[in-house]
Image (cartoon, rainbow, N blue to C red; front, side):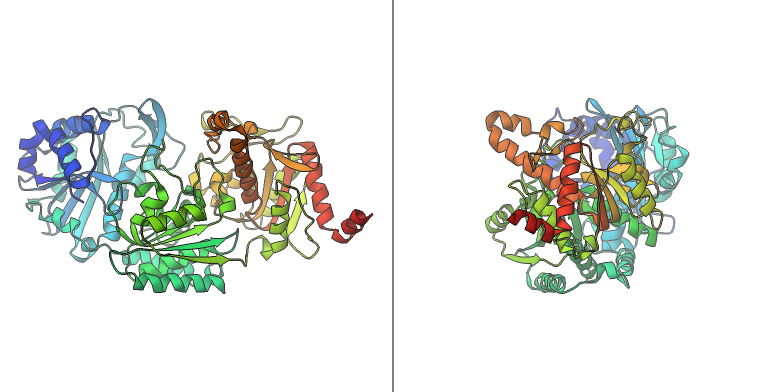
Length: 633
């Protein structure tokens, strides 16, 4: 969606007042109103009125080159800083994408394709500017049909115009990224001019930018082929029974709902019932039909894992634009998509953004953004104070937005070796009102309660040797000290040889499938929505057994954990209600951790009494007849 559009010569005339002109254009065309005191306004003054003016003020770049500023990509909040359009030396349409940054001090980040810099008053890990430029160019290439049919050649780059030291930005580890989107620094105006003039030899009076903006939105063949190949012959994605019924109902309704109207599906099911299987199958089928569809989750881990698996199949395609965050739907136009497939919908929140200051309700924003929305939900997996994904909340917004709601229940589960008994045992164990004995004598699922963290680690390491599919998980009861001190250990037990670190440093959200991630410990944020063969779970002091019942303690959570942020304030107003909510969230967290293993789950409890409790409950479940006889006596 266009904000400011002009020729280069007009931009040069506008430059002295460009910040005010762009601010008015963004308010008028994008409906985003910004103060003259906002950081964006100041960046327009510096990056456009000063820096880009000097770059473009040259005869090497034609006067009738098209200039677009703050171009909002279809169906997204993100905006491209600057686009320049014209014709290249072959007479083919060409567009330069420029990502502008005012950063001056940049440090190395532990996250792939990221750097560490100051934003506001704090230092944060942020995507490398070249990655941002390249990712925007991939969105145009992968979803703007005109880019491949006309064609239009896209040339991304980044301009960090206040930075003199490029050692981090141009580190050898970034060489592949820089080959796709070069970065230019302070004092390199001439090099950036050369890059632009090589791509835009002749101007086009802005026609290329208008052609892009008017393009039909459809997935590229590369994306569809890679996704289709992932499903072919893969039993993991075969639809069975009720999964097939829900899937075909979604497909039929997508065809039936006309533009301007909406429909909402609610697919409910516990762990391993096939919610994600339906979502991925639907994604592929709808892409094959040329529809504008996205897979959406609040949790980054499922998105990262699917993207990583697909990237192995196709090095050329970029899948980040297909698997998106629920944060991106505030402030976008209605009906921007044909279908949104919202996995892990129980994790949706009211406000988006890092600071929770954007939008007003993710459920409402997502429903407004598509003709058909499919929510995949398991209310017992709400694990943070902010989670609002419930049947009642989704139903209320579907009604408010006049969207008919169709529900499906998934009951057959295929995780935990297909053992309904194990899931029933976990539910009974975590029931706050006491527990019933569940018969585990008929299951082959491997359940063990071990005596030490070292035993747990060694057991998981042994299982992991065969196919690198077993991992260690823990409740978030230990501070993430290794984030600032990579040499430090986060979780260590005195008197043992156990000392390990939390995940999320080197491998990011794709931790669970990384080669060496068995040497780190995962948390709820990097395993929810995913699975492995055998999982070793450390139960921390936030869940302890006392007097024959499990009790929770939100105060035992780590200071660095944001999951329960807000409970102390709520407790000052209504302590009983706040503690009841934290109790549910902590139990849900362990229910999720304890149901990630496909073939087995091993448990170590840091509290000795809790370890005895788990061991006793497991023994009774494996001898229900003896327990029943003992109860009668």
